[in-house]
Length: 165
Image: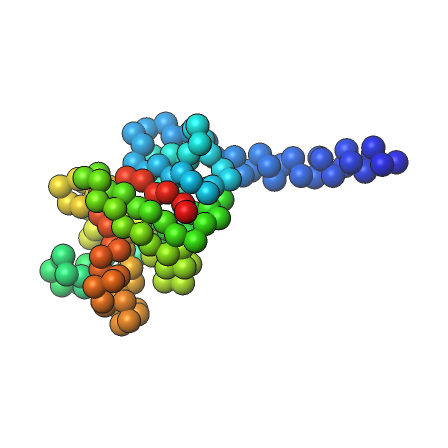
């Protein structure tokens, strides 16, 4: 009887385990996440290409920023969704740009403010020349309290890696 129950529990849990697997990227890797994560697709890390990030629900933030003229439309997946995909379980994110600039961002920012990893600006795909391919964007026009140097400095562009700490 115990063996039958264990077998049934295994069968019920198996589809969930398979559903949580993260496929390896097929295209150029845009983002690598490591550190305190439970789901990987390469040795000790989770890597994402454009298609993987575009497969997530996309959110748009319209906001004025110090770096753009007028109200700008940023689109991309919620940072929170990306962190959930890798099973992130830390308190902070050490984010690294292509030029090795680093900034530490509390995980609570992703959960409370609905920050996005912008992949496009005003409908144009971000490139390295236009602060891409990924740019952490806060909803500045939704929360006036975000209009401070603290949050502007966390808005890292040319993002390439996140270490969950």
